[in-house]
Amino acid sequence: MRKIIIGYYLLLTVLAMGTYNLVSQNNISVKNSSNEPLKFPWAGGMNSMQYCELDLNLDGVFDLLSFDRRGNRKLCFINKGLEGIADYEYDAQYSSLIPDISDWVITVDYNLDGKKDIFTYSPGYAGIIVYKNISDQELKFERVVYPYLKTMFPGGYVNLFVTYADYPGIADVDGDGDMDILTFGVLGSFIDMHKNMSMEKYGNADSLDYEHYTYCWGHVAESDESNHIYLDTCFSGGKNYKSLQAPRHSGSTFLVHDLDDNGLVDILLGDAEFPWLYALYNTGSIDDAYISYMDTIFPQSTDNIDIFSMPAAAYIDVDNDGLKDLIASPFDPGINNSEDKRSVWYYKNTGQNTDPD
Image 1 (cartoon, rainbow, N blue to C red):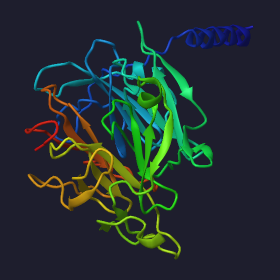
Image 2 (cartoon, rainbow, N blue to C red):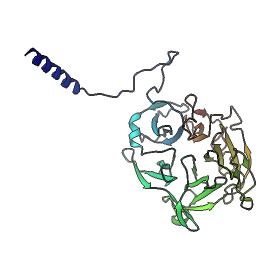
Image 3 (cartoon, rainbow, N blue to C red):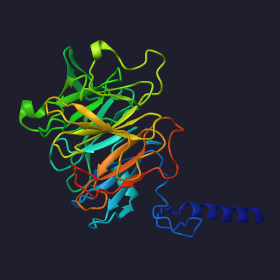
Image 4 (cartoon, one colour):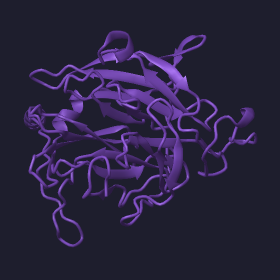
């Protein structure tokens, strides 16, 4: 009888423990070795980061969608909106509202409705998936392109080729209001431009209707053996600047923006196995881009970017002063090619949006 009673009370204890509700909390203070509190101790580490503007809480202020390609982790930070101050609060609840992201992410308002949409890599297809922002009272997205974005070549529509190792440039390259795409083509030496024909065909930016515009945007080529840039070139009689031997690990990053206030988009280019960004300056025209000079040290006004391998850059207003700042972090897809300390570099813009300093 005694054994039965003891067993009965043990069973009650186990059942009582099973009724406990576990609640996740991220407001517990954590301090470093200097006894200083960490601001975001529960956000996890940051190794290979990409940063995008996105209004997460729909208050009219751009927050930060942060993405770590190490583990495809989505980290959401709410912007407190203080003018001239970079003050953000980590809020994990918004991560579940963001669609699946793989390897890279870029937010742009492609249909000009005031809401940033999401472009990301399509695993298994070497292409692009697009999610349209359809937020009303809450943050919501609709997948409008799957399994990949298409572009028109002379033979018909094909996959707009972008690999997991490349970070494309998505911007209004030709100044007509819709979003074009720059990326290295299949051969890898030359910059492909895919022109969005939405404005030309429909008079608005609602569509993602691409045509391959040129194999050699900017009349510039990149070496395969290094990050050397060849100016004033195109196909050079069909010559491919990529090595015919076994290629090294490939991959490049684009940030497309007017950096010298001449009304034409320029490029910040990162390359696999190299820690710098090259600034390529476009002095051509809207219809025929021409990279005539470059900076191999960028930015020149302060400590230049020198961050492990293949930095990817974002150009966003971090501190709410109306000027877009520069953020860089390693993008290299190699599993060991990232930083676990000082992995994000921030440069405050004290110049202009189209002539940053």
